[in-house]
Structure formats: structure tokens, C-alpha cells
Amino acid sequence: MTLDLIFFLLLSLIAISTALGMLFSRNAIYSALFLVLNFVTVAVFYLLLGAPFIAMAQVTVYAGAIMVLFLFVIMLLGAESLPQEQVLPWQKPLAGVLAGALMLEATFIFLTRARPVGDVAHPEEAVNKMTSLRALGEALFTQYLLPFEVTSILLLVAMIGAIVLVRKEKRVP
Amino acid sequence: MIPVNYYIVLSAILFTIGVVGVLIRRNALIIFMSVELMLNAANLAFVAFSSVIKSFSGQIFVFFVISVAAAEVAVGLALIVEIFKSKRSIDVDQMSSLKG
Image (cartoon, rainbow over all chains, first blue to last red; front, top):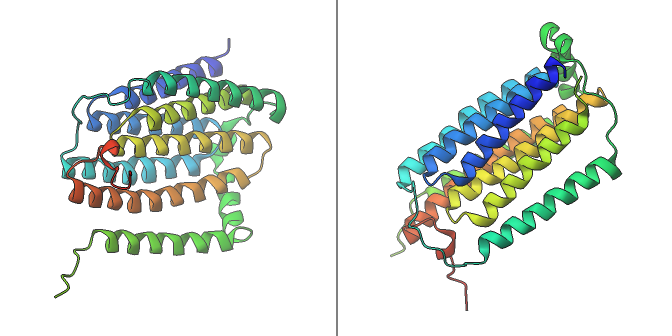
């Protein structure tokens, strides 16, 4: 067993256990903090895969901006935990069965039909020399320029939408 | 070297945990976090595939997914705040005003 594989298994153990921690925490704040840890772990995976730019974007945008927004809203609403009452007794077992079926199907189709072959690229060159970063920037501003600009419009629309949604209604006399 | 299959299986596991979160939790905020987890699992598969075929397209797509997720979170959290203001709760079982 190589060092790479041990590292991978350790990281995936952390990723899965933090995701489960997010799922089963009673307090929403703990859930959010578990999710931050999960996002950082996935960012380390991106580094292992030779994608340093995506890894940094993951840390700043996801673990930084998005989760801070989540924590802010949780604390603003004071909605850390809901009262314990199970309305649908069959909900959890059914969800477990359906999710198990989904995972088996997805894994089966990925491994047999989609047939991904080969190993992932060795990351050292891409991370150390930043060669991939330059090529990524060039592709982003030539081949993918139109989607990039459309994204900026999307962000503007989202910003205006959020402002309009939380604005106080004007009383109609 | 790590075979890409391992990353795909990890991505499927994370996605399934997100699906379970959407199905069993009643707190709207945690359902929303589970959706983020699912997006993240899909991103992991994208980057793994793009690393195998040695192309940047997957990474660029992940960049767009991250920016769309940021926009989605801004609007979604605004909606949740509005729901809390009118119902005083973010339990999704309470949001049944349209039920006959």
C-alpha cells in the first residue's frame, strides 16, 4: 500500500465522517461547522488532483463566504434546533432504503457503464509550478469567455433578488 | 497513483449522504446544507475526471458551479429568512399552507 493511498483513505474517512456529522448533529451550528470541515477536506482532494485554483476557490467561496452566510442566518433566526417530534414514522427507514439503492446504482453505473479508466494525474507539477493555473486562466478568458460573463450577470441578478426578497413591504393605503 | 474509481466512489458516497440529509431532516437550513454537499460531491467527480483526461474543461465547469452555488445560497437564504418571518419556524413540515 503506497503512501498516496493511505493519505487518500485517511482523507476520505475524514470527509465521510464530517458529512455524517453534518447529517446527524442536533444543533444546526454544529452541522454548519462540520460542513466547513468537509469543504476543506474536499479542497485538499482538489490539490491532490492537481487543481490548485479550484482548491483555493473552494476554500474562499464555499468554506469562507457561503458557510459564513449560513452561520449568520442560523444565528439571526435563532433556529439552532427544532423540537423533537416525528410526524412520519416511516420517513427515516424509507429514506435509508432509497438512499442505499441510489448509492448502489450510482456506483454500479459509474464503475461498469461509464468506465472511467486510468489514474489521476500526478499533482506535484501542477501545484508547484502553477503551469495549470496559467492554462486555466487562458482557457477561462478565451474559450469560456461568454459563460464567464453570463456568470457575472447571474451574480448581479441574485444580489438584486436577495435584496428585493428581504425588503420591507410598502403598505398600500 | 490512485485510480480514478476511488474518487468516483467517494463522490457517490458524499452525494448519497446529501440525499439522506434532504430526505430525513426537517430543518430547512440543514436541507439547504445537504444540497450544498451534493453539489460538492458532483464537483469532486468533475475534477477527478478532468484530471484523468488531462483537460481543463472539468475544472472550469466546477468554477462555474461554485459561482452558481454562491448565487443560489444568497437567494435561498433570503427566502428562508422570509419564511421564518411569516411562519416563525423553519420546519419544512410547517410549510403546508397549500395543502387541501
